[in-house]
Every structure is written in structure tokens, then in C-alpha cells.
Image 1: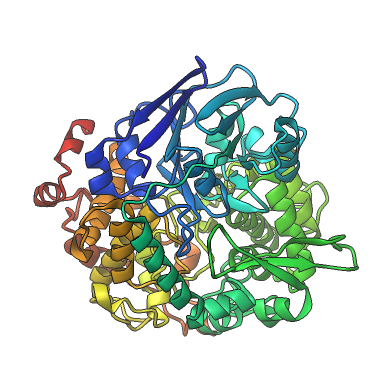
Image 2: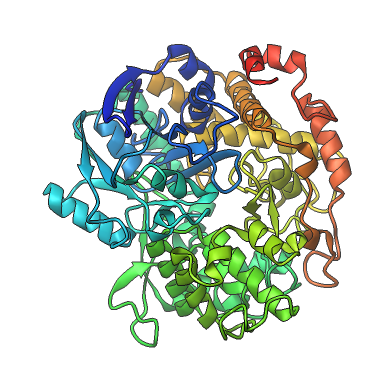
Length: 611
């Protein structure tokens, strides 16, 4: 790595460059692993997420920008305004690689500018520039266009926020390129709280690699294998929603805000249907051979695109499709596009809208609350209205913009919000794959599938090299130790930063990392680093007052569905949690890692943060 961290204090305008401690790199790799170690030094439990002193960190990994395999990503981290806990979101596209080309591995932003600004990072030259003309007047795409024009640099890569973040929506994200998003945990709001509209980057430096020629040879070999992998072919042909029909059959794909057992329209909104109807091309992140992004064209009808635009991925197809019982791809595409332009996480935005439909069906919401709107399953028109109202904090949107937990509590039914620790459950139902229960309960950022997508293991995606076999999806006992190990492996992936869709063997990952850094990682030491990172994120949350009592599935997910692929199954949360704590060496009552775990992972330095 360049080993360079750019520090920007927007209150004072101070800009400095420092060196990341060598021992941090050797123990935490990069990406979100390195981020939690850096941000631990800034952690002040008495400071709110939106306090000007609350830091926001943009960080790359040791393989970012090295032309694969699937490593054109970077991570944004800070304390989440949505959950109050660890906030993390990684994002593809081209901004992360461009940051490394400009000579930096990370950008740490603190303070608050007196007026809206954006950062311009160009070949290690850094400027704070006025963004008052962009604030409140541009969507995420217009922002990128205008900044490139005024910089007279059409090749600049830009990460920016939208109207939702500016207006305080807790699930607003940070966007780049054409709809690439660091969407979860509300870090767009953290960025907006600093009056920071965007970061623009352009560089042309070479990424430092320890053994350049050997790395290039190995990278080419691994990329060729990845390009020929069966899953790569599926993702390229049908995108992330290619398995929608199969997941719906298994009971994994949620519908009718988690209360429906099946959805007859699943085949109409699948990746296969998209490929046969509106698909016009594919899109890839920097150096990626998978190309899972969808480019679509809708030539006519009320949602015609007048050219090509971003197509919806699996989470968006569920959020605005199956969860609302909408079975039209053109409509879902338009809802996803609207959500992106306004700058919101499609999972949380779609979830709070789905919750509103459910509350209306149950008579908890009325037309008086919705200003005359009738919410009926299958009717998408109110969803368009709610997206705009949330982004502007108008009418019912004022309460929806605070997230599903707060929205449900407003009407006295907090138990109906399908969330864990304030983060809406991702679009994979734990009643279909019990291991995913632990992924949601124990994730440091709330109900998240990107800290461990264990459902893929239970679908047959075993990782024999690191001792993760296939397990029965309806079995609870004996599974927790494998979930924990999978979380440690995904912590490694999120530190590299490597896309989960890349079917690269752990051994190849170790070889690539060593050739890039010149270190002598082994698979065992890499897994230990993943475990260290996982535990430090846990300690970060515990220092903020995190309570293990919140590690429970929401009420709707503890109700068996009578038919469908779930077969009436309900995960045994108590057994799963108990065995998980035993596997991790965590105290059953406090949730704290035991002293021997802290010693083994070199985490005793954390003890000063606890009273």
C-alpha cells in the first residue's frame, strides 16, 4: 500500500498527510479491518454520530485498483447515524482505485465546514472547494456531471451525497459512478453533517506492489479462472437477481413485507426475465471480469428511460418488487432510479415503505396519515410519492425518514419493524436459512448480510480450505462455529477489499496478498486477522453501550409462514446464540470477549475505553 492517510479537518481547513502505522497494516490488513483500528483511536462514546468531531473514513485495501480479482472497491466507515453503532458500507466502481492512483490509501474527514464544500484530490494535491451551488439543487448524477465540468477534468471520479442526506434521512448513502452505492448504515448523513457534498479524485500514479511481475502473472491466472467459473457466468448473464426464482421457491426471497409465503410474480422480476426483456448491457467495477451490473433500456410506457440506465439488482428487486407485490420490471427500475438519485439506501427505503403498506392494511395507518393515499399491495404509485416525501422530510415522510424502527414506534408498533439494532433486515429470510439468523443478530452494523452471507454456504457454497462445510438449512445445533468462521473470512474479504461474488480460493487470496505487500501471510494468520477484526468491531460497539439483549429476530420473523419454501420453520435463536458465544469465547451474559481471547488476538489495548 502507499501507506498514506489524508487527514482533512473541515472546521479549520487543515489538510495533512500521515503514515498509517506499520503494525496496523500487519494486524488489520486494510479496508474495514484497518478502518476499525484507526477509528478506535478516535472513539469517544459520549460523542454523538453527528457531532462535528465524529470522523468519517474513506479507505481502500491492499488489492484495490490492482485489476482484480474483483477488487475495484473501497469502504466508508464511521459511527452510524442510523444505528448509533459501527457504520460500514463498501462500494464498487472506480473511486477507490482512483484514490490509490492519486497517492492515498485513506481519507479521514472530521469537523464541519461553515458552508457546503467538496474535496478535490488531484495527484496528492488537495483542495477544499465551494459546493453551495450544488447543495439542495442536484441529484447524485447531476452532481458528478457539474463537478467534472467545473474541474475541467472529465476523468475525475466522484463520490457524493444526494438530497436525502442533506435533509437528514438516516438511511442516506454515498454514491459514485452510475448508481454504485455505499448505502447501508446512513453514512451519507454523516457526510452531510460535515457540509461535505462530494469527494472528487483523479490520479495517475502506479499502485505500489512488492513483486509486480509475479503479482501480475498470478492476477491474470486467477482472473482467467474466475472468468470461467460457473457462478461468474450466472452473474454476468442474469446479474445478482439471477437466482430470484430459486430463492423464492426456497422461501428466502421476502414478500409482502415479510408476511407472505410466496409471490406469483417472482418470475416476472427475475434476472432471467430482465435478460430476456429490458437488458441492454452489463457494467463492471474497475478490473472486474464478472460484470454483474445491469444496464437496461425501457423504450416505451410511463417509465421509459430515453436511453440506457442502471438496472435493479436483487435487493432492489425485492425492496420495490416482491415486498410490495409489484411484478413489473420497468416500475421497479424507475423506483430504484428515483431512490438512487435522491441518495437513499434501497433496502431501508423500500423496507420502510413496505412497513407503511402493512400498517395501512392493518388499519394502523389511515388516509388521514397518508394525505389521501390508499396503500394497496401491488400498487407502486404511493411508493414514488413516499420516496420524494422521505427525501424532503415532508408529511408522513418526516417520520419514515427516521427509519423503520422509529416509524413503527411513532404508531406504537415498534415490534412490526423488521430490523435488528436499527438496520433493516437484508432481503434474505432467516426462516429459510437458519445460519443467516446469526449473520443478522451478531453483525456489528445491524441486520446485515455483507458481514456474512452464510445463506450461500447453506446453498452449497462451501469453503473447505477454511473448514466451512455445507450444513442443513433448517438445522440450528452445531452450526454456530461455522457461521463464526465464515464471519472471520468475510472480515478478511472486506479488508482486502474483495467482492463476495468472486469465487476465488482462499489459497489464491493469500498468494495475491503476499505478492502485493511483500508480507508472509498464511491462511491461518489471515483467518486470525479476520477474527481480530471481528472482535474489535464487537468491542467498538460494546464501548458505545451496545446491548446483547438486542440480539433477537424481529417479531414478524418469529412467526412461521404456513406454506412456501420455509416449511413453517422458525430458527432457535437461543441455541444459535449460546453455541455462537461458546465458539467465539464471549461471555454469555455481557457479550464481551473473554480475557484469553483478547490476549490471543492482541486486543488488550481496548480495555481503556470501558468504564
